[in-house]
Amino acid sequence: MGRRPQSLAACINGFVKYLESNPGYYSPRTVVHYRDGCNTIFRLLVLYDDEVLPYTVTKQHVDWLIAEMQRRHYAIKTRKIYLNILRQICKYYNNNVFDKVKYRFPSDMRPHVDWLTEDQARRLLEMPKDIRQELVVHLELCLGLRRVEVVRLRVQDIRDGYLNVLGKGAAGGKPRSVPFHRDTKDLLDRFLQYRDALIEQFRLDHPRMQQIIVPDSLLIWKSRNSLNSYAEKGTGIDKMLMQLGKELGVKFTSHTLRRTFGRLLYRADPNSFHVISKIYGHENGEVTYRYLGLDMDDMTGAMASFPL
Image (cartoon, rainbow, N blue to C red; front, side, top):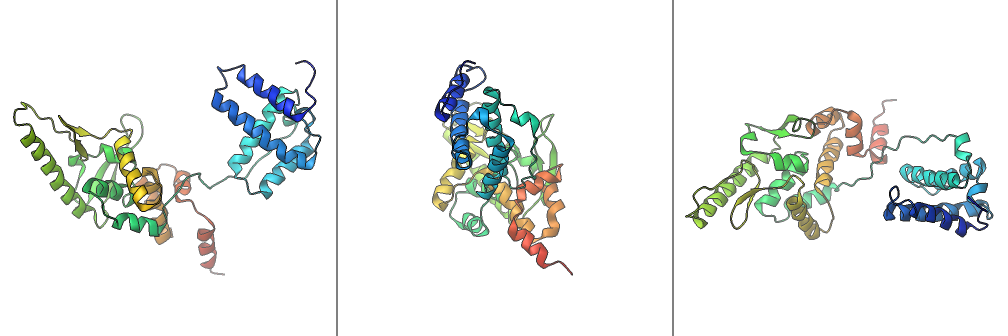
């Protein structure tokens, strides 16, 4: 590197040009991420030192930046990202300040995810839906199934009081059993009637078709010339939930419904944590904790029940 840039803007531009000159390592999106991050970081740092440049950053600058991001309530993940960006631009200008100091952050138990409130969940269950929408919402919101698990369900997976579910994992997925919700049996009975009628109507519409292939999937749909399973990537289900979200006035996904199931069940019965984890098919309780999104309300409730 030749003569160092003498202004902050020139330093950031030089760093960005370096990133752009290595497209094999840095995509255009990544370059924008670094550029915007540098601008944000140094907008903060100039509040502490209006002459700061990447090659003059010291431990004191970094200490102040960490404290300021905490004061502004930046998420821990965001703080880590910004410090990494600062490390990279400092390193580019031969400033090894980060080699001399290490920073540890507390574990951030707040997942960057969303849930429906209890009121929103009730409104979603009660709003008018066709039978396919009703089944998908029920399986994800009331039984905690993943989207891919809904798609993989077969008619023969319906048992007396429970479903055989094929989850994620090696060798085609890890099986588990999930007990019925109080409304599951009635809904499945109605859906199987709809499914039978769908198949019969297809046969009537195609009397000359020599062989009609009926997928063993529970959830199927009818195109012009065939009966089809839903793709595991979930495009059809995504569109289904997107439409319901517009009608409800709340954007949500299959995973929103799955997380909401566990969160509401836990709040109804805090002793149900291990049961929820088993229903989810989680092998690690830490994953379940992140799904539940335990927050200040949960901690306040626990403190209120402290016996001393």
